[in-house]
Image 1 (tube, rainbow, N blue to C red):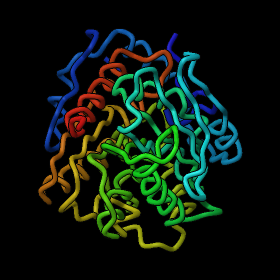
Image 2: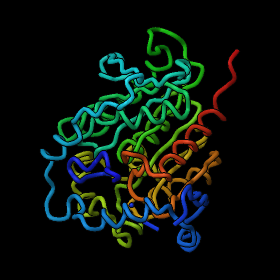
Image 3: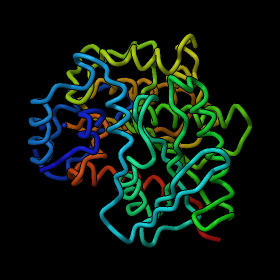
Length: 338
């Protein structure tokens, strides 16, 4: 039986045929093209189970339960995965390194949780999958959370963590050969915002970015917020997350809502999103904007999938393939060893 990492609080963390279904790669919304693709039997069965649950936030918004669930430490089952707690300056972090991972190819993975919850500890298993697939090391930052630390505090923590990552590896000070920034949901938003902030602050950019199911528009204008019945989370939560994270900040600020960003000069970006998630069009619209600005963009809309489907344990066939796509992206944009 497939069980989501987010099932602890029935939160962030389903749909239709054949194993190893390929995602639809598009430059703009093409729903008919998505719906024609088949999904693994495991994916079909899992979505059916998800549909029997009540999405988080349908009836109330329990922040305490959300934080408790997403604060759980979920270490990978493989005892050979190395977990190393460090301080990236003042930002607590944890390294995740699978056997054979290159310590000089480093990914800053920014966890999800609606900007108000989540932790590095909760994402250890997902980071281990990425490390094993891409043969890279992954740094999970515990950035500060809203509403106690509203925008842009968490973003600034992520920028500082990437600066530290450039000069430090799992074994200590060492210059990175390549860095990447990745993250899901709120962390997908912060992935794009970190890229924009690094560019704006004239800091060294990573070799690429991987936003997974990102929030990109806090004006809440994406059509999928109204038309998609998300099996994981209710669209009723979005104004609550916005209030906690932004307060009185203009939701059109591009560092808060990256769909309004200027993507000129940014590195390649791989978007991954699911067909059956309310935030699907946030990915589509941000990818369109980045491509219009001249960025090298790949957008994958995974048929039958849902919010952060890559986090489920054991992995769905689509999730395994998704990690392979991320690994290919990282390898193709990493410079060769000297």
